[in-house]
Length: 78
Image (cartoon, rainbow, N blue to C red; front, side):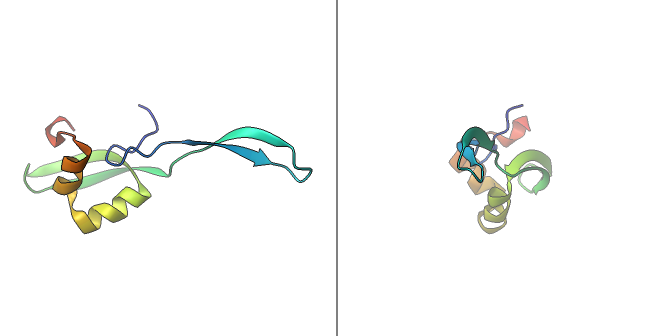
């Protein structure tokens, strides 16, 4: 599975690691992804998703059903 948030689509960013002498080498800034079990009341079951921490905070505010609809995913497949 790719390192990508399943609800927001957040993924790694290309960047430079800059040393003290200002030499630049390529690196990746990975998204902070966590496996999270969320209760889905409409489906009456737990859903396991790989989410960014930002998505977890937004999920508490908006709710699972609304965020899944925005992302265009079907929760029955998870």
